[in-house]
Length: 74
Image (cartoon, rainbow, N blue to C red; front, side, top):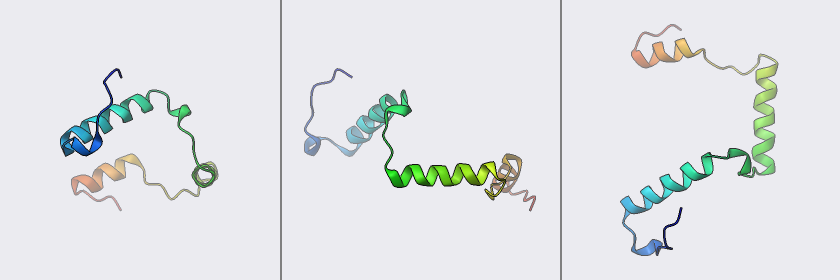
């Protein structure tokens, strides 16, 4: 990103959203470079542990699609 620095206060909401999208795209290219807080890492570990032990309470993708389409399976 080689754009010159911009004054956020003078930017429109649309320009700010565009900048945010550019930043997110840049950051998402290397997600390992985004540091997690201790609380975030603990929560991710907890969720992975639930998945590993079959206790996640997750919903199968087919069920999610059926619910979204109004054809509830459960």
